[in-house]
Image: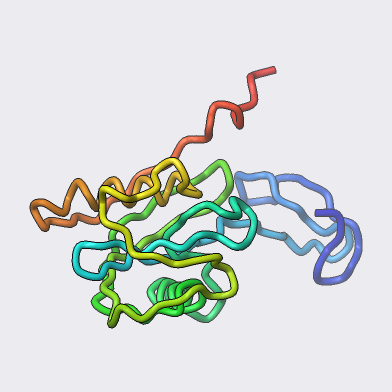
Length: 185
């Protein structure tokens, strides 16, 4: 960040009085610019024993498979965001949403929240951000072609929990990949 969104003057980084973190602060109007994690909301939609996946038509990870999900918008709940993303990416309506995984991804300042959901009908299609949308049996999941570790982890949990039909809410963190870790100086 170089300029203040309030007055347009330059910003500098320092720890404001009463705070404990480095923040961008306007040198002119003294506005503190907080930067907080983004929330990604999505669904793990099912139809019978199958799971609905979308093949991404956009970067990052274009061409890879994912659960329908995306960034939460201002003015909506997490559940509304998950429903909207499922409709946008898979042209699918879902019901009986139950929060399932909450996965912190601190190295990219995101929190991914997935709901288990049932498709209202087997009617779905590729939305603008999807190349194709398909139902998969567990044995046919394209594990090596999944776009994100949070999606892989959510699916792993789901297939692990499915035999007992007990789906506890899972909260965990995804560590950065080794190539993303900067060695100490």
